[in-house]
Length: 194
Image (cartoon, rainbow, N blue to C red; front, side, top):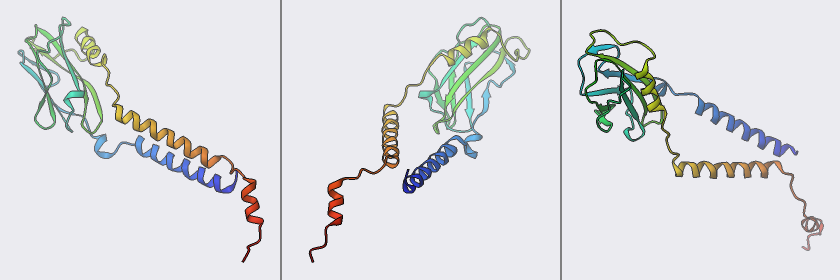
């Protein structure tokens, strides 16, 4: 491989490695994204709430987010659509729970593209804090938010495919040896008529 091609390929590899490193490293702002508060609060014991509110450190995308609320009998308590609550929150209306633990499982996509998953637990009518892990409500709620999929944006997928094709073409052009054409060599050897 000629020196020119080796330098070009090395530069291309260095640029691609740098871009991959930057994309894989979360920024300081993105690293801090998370759940700020929950109403009812995680671990609280109360009477039946009419809704669950979660507030995040960044604005959520309600169309790409999911929240499932289950009681200890594995009954789903969601009673309406997920809605925006303030600038950085989501609100899920719920029906009255039976006495026992309630688990709220969420899978939230923030408008910056980050995704958050987690659970909030509270108890209804027991006067004691809920169990910290496991249980049928937790299993049902986790399965409900995990059992969905987000579709791929067709414009982004097309742009990615086109970019990949262009990159492969550029690498092929840089790596392949130049084609010598005899008719062009003859032109270089003829004397100048002037």
